[in-house]
Every structure is written in C-alpha cells, then in structure tokens.
Image (cartoon, rainbow, N blue to C red; front, side, top):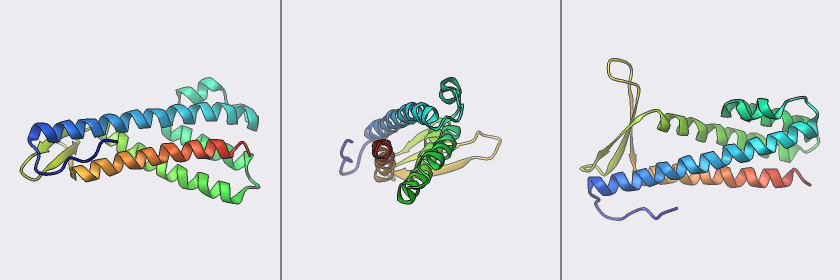
Length: 161
C-alpha cells in the first residue's frame, strides 16, 4: 500500500490518493471474492452438500459468506478453534463487503480546506448519508481489506490440516 502523503495536499493530490485507496480496495475485494468462491467449490464437493459450482459462482457475496460458514460448520465441527477463526473472519469479511458496497454506490468529493474526502450515499430529494474521511481513515480501510484477504488465505491453508 502506498504511504500516506504528509503535509497539506491540494484538491488534486487528495483526489489522487483517495482514488488509489478506492482502487486498491476494489482490487483486494475482488481477490477475496474470487478466492472465497474457488474455496467454496472445493468445500461443496468435500462436504457433499449438493451445491453446484454454478450456484456458488453466481450468488452475491453475502450468500457466499453464508455458504462458507455452513460448509465450515459441517466439515470442521470437531475443530472448535478453527470454527471460531472462521466465524471471526466471516464478520470481518462482511464488514469489508458493506464498506465496498457503500463506496461503490455513493458519490465522492474532496474538501481540501479540511484535508478530507467525503462520501455521500443516497440522492438529492431523498435520505442522504455523508461521511468524511481523513486520508488515514481510507488507508486503514484498505489495510483492513488486505488483512481479511490474508486471513482467508490462512483459513484455506488450515483446512488442509
């Protein structure tokens, strides 16, 4: 991940860094979803639960997370510590998914005088939510997504033991 720029930034520099953070978040999330889907296909076969590859690859991320917990609970019911890790990962992945969804469907603006990036969801005439982010906050969300990605890789590897 790129280092957080220091000092007061121009609107263009703020937008550039925010754009890189958002782009990185979308790439990391994409990797999480792909790896989760591939793992689910293997788990479905191993668990003999009759869930098809097509069904897994075409469902939305939240449903894939539900399948993950279901398969883990069936396949690893004797591994209490591993199940706790999987359930904790599920919660973290859900949190990142909600942020990614909100970020993808909102509008963005730059406030150079406060050195913030603004995200607005909803549309004029209806309910709108505004959240202001310092660069360090956006950076932290990307780091959170990278951690979720790394944890998924660890969990996939631990399933082999």
